[in-house]
Length: 184
Image (cartoon, rainbow, N blue to C red; front, side, top):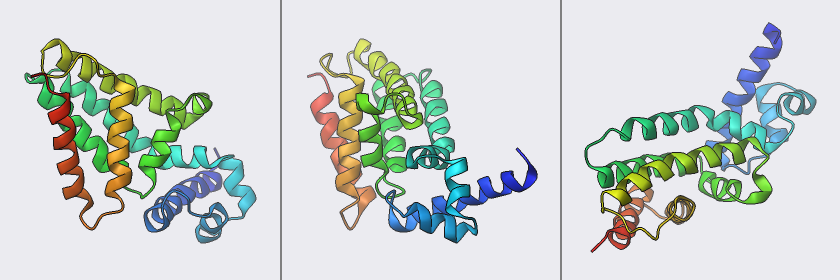
């Protein structure tokens, strides 16, 4: 990529990140291009779809989630490892506003060929490894699967976005979720 094209690419990601934080993931792409000082054609040349731009904005976070899951596979308490990963996942899914909704949608079959769909599948596989480990240890019910666990967690994120204290609400809802997931 030429130096000027690379600068435009980076400026678009930075501007999109700020716009998504301010207006949520539904922020206007034309406004993002204008705020970045480039034409809409430049934005669409780099990011043909909103999915591509969202993926670029969230890529670092996605990579961090996958690395965190891999590291937690060595934790001595599999139930606590799963809970800790879900809490970290939820922190990221609530910002920018709308990320939880985007991730829920990205898990559907119609998104499977998109970059976000591929990322959602990698996230599902990562949490699936943590979940299976916690199930083998007898900490979590065996009738739970990774896709359902992520949908429930994302639903908590969507609900938390609409409260005065999103982090506190998310903590309470995750505690309730884990009370229901624990083996008796």
